[in-house]
Image 1 (cartoon, one colour):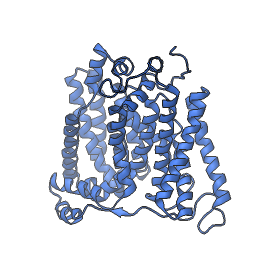
Image 2 (cartoon, rainbow, N blue to C red):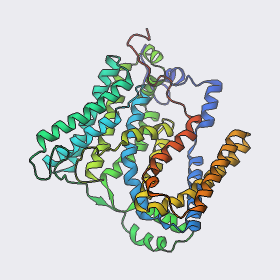
Image 3 (tube, rainbow, N blue to C red):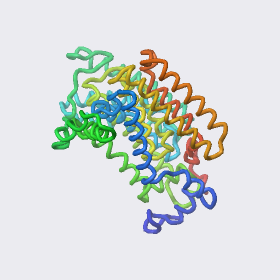
Image 4 (tube, one colour):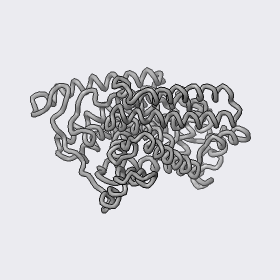
Length: 436
């Protein structure tokens, strides 16, 4: 039975009812109640901004919303966000991609090598995409065609990628100026762009440190000046992924493979082909994250450069409930805490303790309103502990500052775990013909 691409809003009314659904009646109502619309998202962001501005005034830590921190937040969020987008494409097709870290490694090496050889960062971008996609293709062959355990395949790809990068570096970079078995020669980077007049108009307002207005100015100045073209492309990929996956027939069919591949095949969908597409695109996006590390975050390939960002991207995807907007928020949270600890140090991170205290107090009120006594008590105890820490110290110990982003990721994931809904067939091995 074939799909009529013209039926339904995205091509396949029967498919949208039968496959992606599994969400009818009460199930659909519950899912709808969990989703956050644009209005709620904007109100939430505005509330966080007001709260952050208030914390800045109380603590006197101006770096919490400075343009420097916001610019660094964007740069630090992009690799994590791209890796998370890669995981989103793969898992929406029903394939768990633990190998994102390895595909990022391939992207860093491939991007550095092709950019160095060609003298163009754009060629390096194509090289990184190709190397990452190659890692994705290997994962797809192993998991989709041969039914290898998806976790085992992902871990194996990460190990192989590290070994392959070391071998290739030893063969091709050793003996070159600045190169060696663990690093490449210098590579060209992307040029920077700024919104005309943004720096001039916003700098003065930011420097006055007014409540909310100066914070907005700092944020806008940070995200509109000294941007690279690759940063702009990466940011645009978030709404682009949403439009493709949720507003096109191709996206609906791909997501159906992650929800109910048996029903999808019974409706005439080539499940294998779409799973391959999702995993290869996943690898390409992870490779693009690697290119960002060698052409924007630095100007060289270096062994260990990914620093676990592939795994953090996977955590951001889970935090975002397998949706692009939530994923971007998770990546931004990690990037922000990382930027604060890098630029502000122990004093700035100490200011975040007050921010966390207020958030936990809001969680107390929310849990009390929903009559969740245990959750309210736990949040209250945690709020008291963080407030005592804030009051009894002037800065966070240096040993903890470095781990602030990772601790934040773990904390947020633990708090968000109750509202998550992964694709129904994510990680389930599917064999062709199961749909009859």
